[in-house]
Image (cartoon, rainbow, N blue to C red):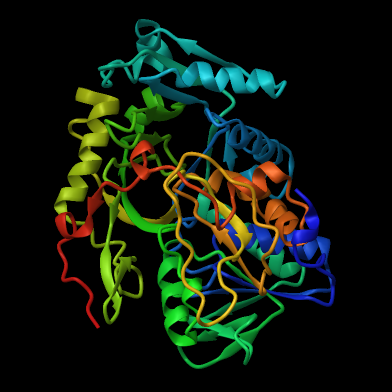
Amino acid sequence: MSTSIFPPTPSPKHSYLIIGAGVFGVSTALHLIRRYPHASITLLDRDAYDATTRVAASWDWNKVVRADYDDLIYCRLGLEAQDIFRSDPLWKPYFHETGIFWICRSDYAQEVMDNYKKLGREADLKAVPIEEARKLYGGMFDDADYNGVKEVLVNKTSGWAAAGDCLRAVTKEALRLGVKYIVADVAALEFNEAKTRCTGVRTTNGQIVTATHTILSTGAFTPKLLEQSAARSGINGLRAGSRILAAGITTGMTKLDKDIHDSIYAKMPVGVQGYNAELGPFIGSLPPTPDREIKWWGQTIFTNTTEVLPGRYLSAPPNAPDYAQWKVPQELKSDIDHANKVFYGKRGENWKMEKYRICWDAFTTSADFIISPHTSWTSPSSPSTPIPSSSSITPLSTSYSSNGLYIATCGNFHGWKFFPVLGKYVVKMLEGDLEPELANKWAWDRERPDGGMNPDWPRWEASGVLNQERPRL
């Protein structure tokens, strides 16, 4: 693929406005300011970076850090990110190499080990028979659900990171280097008079923030923002269409007694119950924090179909300042109880869950990121580009203009672990230097598989799991 189809290489004279200060946005800001120290780079987010609570999916108690992927590209990027977590003073304090205990109902363990071999990487990982696995880690997973399981992947080089603390620290470093930070809610994108180029954003209080490059790292808010911007500008091709779907999942925590923590769980690995497209999303359990709190995520991933404009429906987080993330209905709390049961069985049956949160993110049917120029609009009358349903990936068109608008989002609830390197690849995209395989995989316009083939594709609707009135105009 020729790099000539991309816009000219960015220069220090260019300005960059990054909407969203999660891992995609902050990593992009950090890599940009390091590469272009005299450029104007601005992060804009609805929450202060050091707020005690935020709606960003990246803001969390903790997140898994692993390279255990059956997809070779994400395995490679995971290893690249882990190398930084282990060695860079900015990232190292937040990474905990506890290992991972992945209960596999497919050939996943073999595929992960094959990818390590293809990449020439050695690690302390192996596929373990069920009966042997039950005895590992002091037998803490001996009462887990092993129905339909083939083997267990044990990788002692995986682990977890203190997600919120790390996000704050990296944002603070980007600001120290010269990145500006604006706290505001975005109402819509702004365009030049001819509607041929994005020039920035308008906030809900009427402020207009301009830049030569506007990068949307807006996660679950992305479809709604593009819908609002299309309606305001008349540029129909702005809409995300079927490319991006906003969805939520529940997380929960319990605090262990000190004696139980010290005797059994102090050296706990990340636990994963791996499923397939027929059975549903995989479930996870993260090791205790310094406060002795174990975390789970559930199996119910759900959409929230909402009338965001008259006659226009799409999935979006609840229309509340904090996405109603702390208002967790009993049905979703029960999802965490189920997660506890499939990992710890009778060991955890008396544990009392003390914290719950609904986390929102942006999904693609293939579980791939979108790191790409927005390539499907040329004029106010242009129609939305249809997205065919296919498992193939087609090369990028050579006829588009970037129009100053770029997309860097869609973590699919697995993006956090790539935090140290996401911005590197966003900058490569901006410079037209992204390797063809990645450019095609992360393109705005590409053919995508049916979501039903993705185990983690949202399968439920909020009306069935959220006890709240549907937001209306």
